[in-house]
Image (tube, rainbow, N blue to C red; front, side):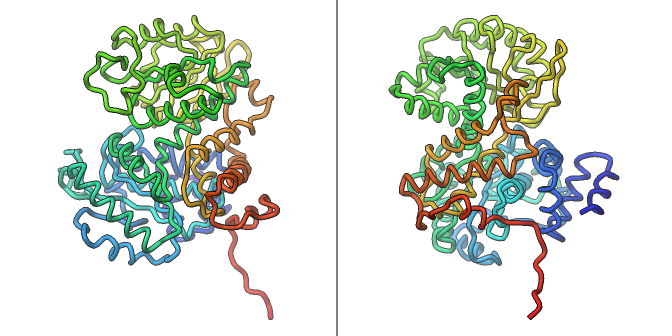
Length: 498
């Protein structure tokens, strides 16, 4: 490990460090995880976001050998046969992406394989799930990205994606094959195009063991940040007015889970939705809009039409502003100062990533609110010193949530994953932020403690799974010791003397 750390220090940038660690993961998996788990705060931004964005943009050109299952649309009718070639026969998680909407990069087709690989590495690095039962998968259905189609080194199909009906038929075949070959497997849908993501989650969530991290994981980490922020403010969730800047699958997913949380507090579904407003590229979502899909229509309230975010803030007077737009700089000085004029402690979440897609920076949020903002972003920004006080921005990244949920699901062999599971994960994450950390504006636990944080979260989530009757194993007497005994440790096996 000391040798690897020396080698990494000699690299000139994080993309080179990513490539070095990526090669190490293929040569020596144990040593790779030993390094990454030794200092999560340092290495998570290298093996995942934001560095993974740069790697994905160049993935076909950086490619050396496959790290997962490439399942092509040309394999339709033979999916089970192809899946059966995977060497591990007890696959417990498949992270599958179509590459249709990778981070804030849009459709990058087969170059999106870096995301399933990276996500599953976080299962192990952040929650100590044994890596051998994890399969990264890229569902190669084509791409709308003409630049990639014209690139002679592009690895994927050089054709437009299929119709929704044809795609659904292909995914049905995949789901059926997974159920037959790997009956204990959970399908983790990741970075699909917005309409596909919403439709496929609705299609399968009540039928098989699956979840969509962009919808449910993003929602849970946002709610965790809200829980912490509202505890600092001394306010309840039902007292808030929430405005979303961005109304795609992530925005709608967060909004729906907030509705579930508000219903748990006793509100009706109608009253809960009334506390949430949304805005997309075509303006505020309100009843006169003719371009809304069903998942957006339920948030169309009687407001005056506008495409001006600052005007929407002045009119709606939100206490919470959440950005999931991938519109860099969308939270302008006017927008943020208007939030500050309405609220003593405005909650501002700029969740789009990578870094150059964030709606505003931490420094801007603090400067334009005189240090009063309770701020989080999808990427990690540096501390900001203002008026002699050091403020620590939070990173509302899903890696606090999905590995912990996966650990609980893996241990309990859960039959389904419900919104209650994600709400429990959000609550458990928020509870681990200390009063001292909150005083510095931190809304999430420190990344250096991510493994312990996620094990604690997984324990509470596992209790929820047992309580709801979703587990397929007997509930242990001591759930803490039971989960601790199952954890992966990056150690070489030894031969005992006879």
